[in-house]
Image (cartoon, rainbow over all chains, first blue to last red; front, side):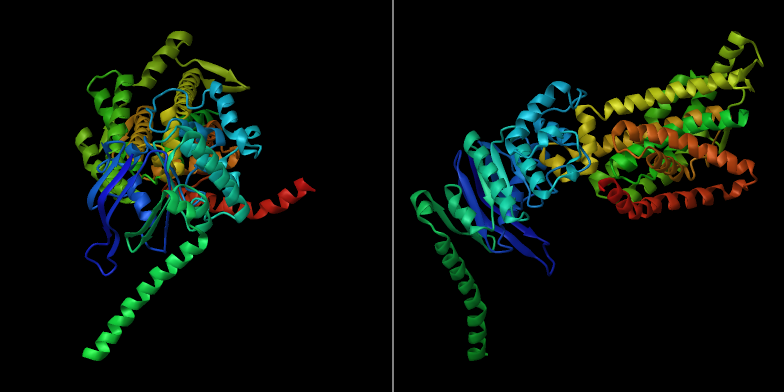
Amino acid sequence: MLKIDNIQKTFNVGTVNEVKALENISIEVEESSWVCVLGTNGSGKSTILNAIAGSFPIDEGTITLNGVDITKWSENNRAKYIGRVFQNPFSGTAPGMSIQENLALALKRGKRRGLGWGLPSSLIADLKKIVAPLNMGLEERLDSPIGKLSGGQRQALTVLMATAVKPQLLLLDEHTAALDPKTAAKVIELTQQIVNRDKLTTLMVTHSMQQAVSLGDRIIMMHHGKVAYDFKGEEKKRLKVNDLLSLFDEIRRKDMIDPAVAKLLQEYYV
Amino acid sequence: MSLLIGSITIGLILALLALGIFISFRIFNFPDMTAEGSFTCGAATGASLIVAGMNPLLACLIAFIVGMLAGATTGVIHTHFKINPLLAGILVMTALYSVNLHIMGKSNMPLLNETTVFSWIERFSSSVSGPDAVSNLLGWEVNTRNLWVLLFCVLSVAAFSFILFWFFRTNIGTAMRATGNNDQMIRALGVNTKVMIIIGTALSNGFVALAGALLAQYQGFADVQMGIGMMVWGLASVIIGEAIINDNSLGAVILGAVIGSVLFRLLVAIALRWGLNPNDLKIITALFVFVALILPTLMSNRKPTYKRKVNA
């Protein structure tokens, strides 16, 4: 389904701030699989999502989606196949436009946009059906600007918009990290409903180990631009939050040893 | 009274400029300085073609297209070469100065004895109601010809406003508004924002150039300097319109830009009548826009008290 083959990305090449964000990463994701991507800060977990979405060109490697090589495609062309929800609840919606206009835009994802009426009255009933399951009363105020809604409501709408046209791949970039716990739980529940209903292939970056353990069928842990661990199937089902925590500790300890050992060696031999 | 009608007529012609500025400034959040060059460019193109004997309406259409080309150039410089919008506009505006001189072949081109849109209306007026006919408008004696000119301007501005309103409600127009509102979001929905911005700047400068072509015909000459300060002028109109209409819906904002343009022209006419030195016009305009820009902040500081009253 999604095949990432040996991709590399280095930011700020040739400067003091050079960062190897992705180092020879290869991941293959099966159809209808839900992968949770965990990792420390700066491990490259969001970078890999953005690389797949096409926010920047990658240096090496190929990205193949359903047998189509999309490595050289622009971000907007990839959007034909990829639905995205961002970490910032304000990134996924146009605040100055109404709820109905935002939804109508989402229903045209990846389709030709011509001189047809953007918001035909026949569409309103469909839009009401789309937002009704949210139980937020939005179906009664479809014409109010999205900027007036709360972050949680906007993020819930972004999830609906990303999946309004069934995407081949859904990318969720810590989409509940900026929400309060109660709202986050609601948005996760909505995401779960939609992903299960449409059997979407999903890649979700998250900070929450609870989410990683309870959602999806695979966990990828990243560290320093590489895949550190990859758990699938039964192994993933057995995984508990504590197991993940101890893995993180292990990674951190390894990190600490390296500079310490280097210093020790230096003291001995120089 | 004839001063009033003349001011409204010019205000309506410049409403097309205001609509152009509205597209770049409000829809795309793109402070587009190209307008200063494309306004003159429209005037120069229109005037030269009319002097060469072309049908004035066709000359206006070509002026519109030339303006679109200028705007598209700015759009491409900004989107494909990643140059700051303001600088991209200034580059094209500066280049257009030479282009405009080449188009006209001189710095000023008179149109007094040429067939323009307005000389057509004049001929139409004298054939309908005789030459130098005078009409009674609310007790004032007005030259009938000027009323026909005013009617023509009202109708054309109404038509162009409606076209814009329609366009920005279509699928592509909605995507363009979203581009100005949140480009990350609309890219994730599969829209090529670069193309949207280029179409937007093209459309904006098409309107600006059309305003230039019409104004040249109305005042009877095109001048290479006539674009100076036009961006601020258009901006002033848009801001006045927003302040008066106080509604963010698309139709209201478009209507506001038109009303703002007419009102601003009237204010200027009154100020000049009261003895304002024409040399001071630009500084007054700039000051006016400055005040208008900071006014919303001052107003919003007042809003909480108003809201509390409503809730109580």
